[in-house]
Image (cartoon, rainbow, N blue to C red; front, side, top):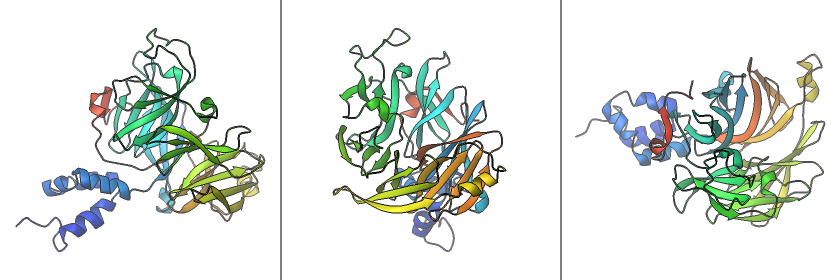
Length: 379
């Protein structure tokens, strides 16, 4: 009879109620206890279940002029650990976070020969590699990343922003059509042209999409008061109604539902809508949050720059994150300033992305250029 993983408790309880709930770093330490623990926590079924238990946390990026920090905000942690570092990267090689999906992050990057490219990394496993395509990333903007469920591939939705030839003289897309393309992570094939949405695809690149019901959603662009939707299974575009608001709208995901928010130019108040009936496209005004702008500016002696407001979700909770320089302010939906954080020497910015960490292995990493584990660009 096999020895129990933890004396006094059934293995099912230890595996599916205790180990599966641990954060990735703690789980990796548990693997060092004994071979049985390592074997049990390394199966694909366990790792998928473990990933499903991880919280999806809003990401804040910090830049100190040389290196980039990826920070996750977790309001459910102990108060002194709400804003915690997930990874620190060489800002010379990996310099702009573009997309996030299932624990994978995609960055704008450069090769050793300073060719513009895209790179993928997993902060939990500290794996990183350069993507083969697009060959010249300066020609493309990243609109989003998604799991293509019919094939099981992780794919990038790209927009070709220029019809000019590649800077290295080698253009794998001889037609040079502007518009949208899809590219599988790790694929040897060049990006595949799929056309484009009714809204100008280049404008979508300025907005972070929300992934709901296996569809990417973008905020209304310009005077076009509709949400652009990309079905990640069919890989096709459509539109849906947006709430009517006099100011710019931004989109986010709230516990599996679609949310939209707007704030006035003086950042005095934020309005939040949710879409409880997705098929009916009927938006419900959920919150109007009066921001404690005077209280925040009081911390700077009445001075301070512009407050950049982001509405994010953590589970079923709605949070407001306000950023000014190296300061991050956490405000709840009652307009109460809950706490503030300073990252000395780092300029902060909210990218609108979330990170749900994973230890699930991905075969494409080892086949890619400059594949590393626990080495540069990680610091």
